[in-house]
Amino acid sequence: MSIFPTRVLFATDGSKDAELAATTAVGLAKVTGSELHLVHVGPVVPEHFEPTEVEPARMKREAERILDEQTKKVENMGGAAQSHLAMGGAAERVVTLAEELGADLVVVGSRGRGPIKRLLMGSVSDSVVRHAHCPVLVVRWKPVVFPARILLATDGSEEAELAARTVAELAETTGSELHVAHVGRLITNGGSRGVEVGPLPTVPQEELDREARELLKVQVERLRAAGASVAQTHLRRGRADQQTIVVAEESNIDLIAMGSRGLGGLRRVLLGSISDSVVRHAHCPVLVARGD
Image 1 (cartoon, one colour):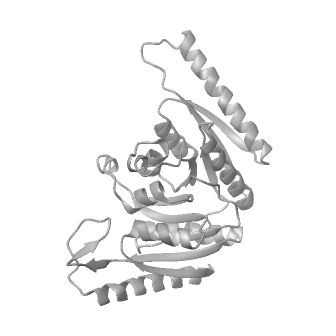
Image 2: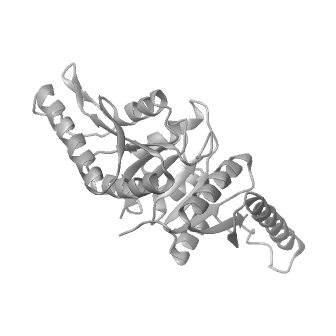
Image 3: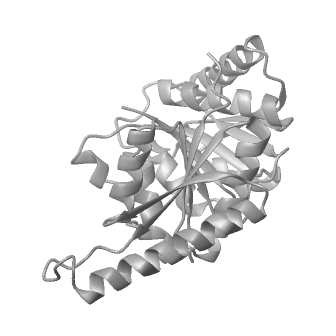
């Protein structure tokens, strides 16, 4: 089943980071013939204010001004978007609107952070990634300009397969260069390095390496069988998040794509997954495809 053209929802707060996301969203919509929607969410109106009071009206007018300004910027980039205004919690409103519109991709900006701040989650983009029903493209540091160099980071999961289908068609549609990476487990000093927590491997390192090579081979064969052209493969050992970022930097990747398991209400609050880490630390935009 074809993924593109699709319905893209671009969420903006009017910041410089959102401008990078706007460039990406407009370019993606144009090159894939997708329908583009733009949303700005104004602040929560304090409960002690009545809707008719001056302050709520002022807040709404400011939100409308930002939305109009962002809509004009999109138009100046050569894009055409249907605009939506919402008031309240930004992440909640973006996720809800994406479901109402039947969006197939959400594009959001994210501020670059220093080493300490990168450890602190809670931003709008983080929350949208964890709760959206569809893939989310988090744009930070730079926009994605197509054709691009795309890295698919795969672990063989169903979520990774969803990411693979998305980027395979994206690469073909945009004439982009597709790289595929897999990071195998590494045993060292009797322990196993990795983000995941679980029992230590009961097989030797040679067997883990063989399994990693086979997994990468199968993923590449599936992509090629689907008509995708894979420019280069990367097989590494160690922490999946760290090695994915290293590969992306060494290969001058413009966009990382990966899967993330859907989490229930309580588990969504508990961070630490590989995709969370890559989104926080990568020096390029990241597309996260998640399952329920």
